[in-house]
Image 1 (cartoon, protein in one colour):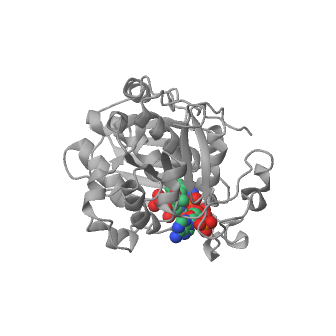
Image 2 (tube, helix red, strand yellow):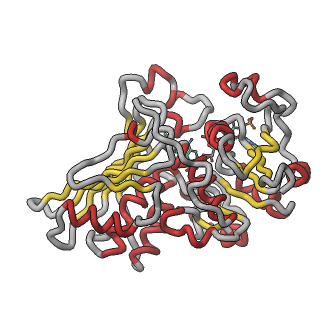
Length: 351
Ligand SMILES: NC(=O)C1=CN([C@@H]2O[C@H](COP(=O)(O)OP(=O)(O)OC[C@H]3O[C@@H](n4cnc5c(N)ncnc54)[C@H](OP(=O)(O)O)[C@@H]3O)[C@@H](O)[C@H]2O)C=CC1
Ligand SMILES: CC(=O)N[C@@H](CCC(=O)OP(=O)(O)O)C(=O)O
């Protein structure tokens, strides 16, 4: 805590969408100073060369990826790095004495054996998987207090889990009936180019991808299983939508009773009471992605159907804010014992 009493933060992966969003959001955090922006490929260059929108806002040269040097410049490090990179880097950063909030999927699964299957790379050492606290703030927020290492949830799991957990915990939905139909803007794929995100491939197009193979399936099932106290499996299909930001997770489940939309509204408002970033809509009103864009909100709405006995739950987030950088800062707030909303009071950008 050396910069005017502020916590010093470094960002590895500053040249990616998650990293550059951390820079944007942290400009307005009253207790955090970004003291190092880090790149493995462009060290030495001014960050504004690659990101002219930061001109006059942050004047820094990018630093290289050296854990000892990072520990000299910062108290906490956000690793906004690809899966596989975090697995190797995070243990070194923790050993160097830094607090870490990791945005990748590398420390979210408790069973190391699952990494080869879902992420196609070896698991990090089991000790670090055990040390990592899964930071779904509105559900497990109390676990973050005082810890050194948070594994930030995935974007799709954040929208999906916040949408399902209160109903599952209350026993209102059949745990073997859950179908999740999720859609993401293209920034969810990161800044790297690939055929999948080529303009001509995504514009005027709607694609389903990774059906039954998505790496977020074990993450979602791991948490739902803990909440339900018995094994939960889900059908999960992701879609790429021609927009920049936003995730909509539309979830279908059979109900264990004849619950109305108003019943769901009351249940969820009670569960999320005192958690300002979850906004539960009124009966019969479902949210749209633009209504949370640029903010840390997760908005949830319901439609029940007495004819089929099923409920449809719609949950939306901004994938780069609540699904990544915003929730990462919310987690750091909880780690430090600060108000979870500190520095995150963004009104959604509309239209
Ligand atoms: N985009 C999203 O909506 C979300 C992303 N995530 C996760 O957050 C992480 C970051 O995602 P995102 O920002 O979208 O990804 P990007 O691909 O946009 O950025 C990743 C950055 O990591 C850096 N990097 C690559 N290799 C290394 C390395 N060996 N050492 C250090 N840095 C490296 C790159 O910068 P450079 O080459 O300059 O080092 C790159 O800019 C990923 O794990 C992603 O899965 C999680 C939730 C949502
Ligand atoms: C649109 C798009 O491609 N989204 C990515 C989300 C990746 C992500 O956020 O990665 P982790 O949460 O696993 O770190 C995907 O579906 O793989």
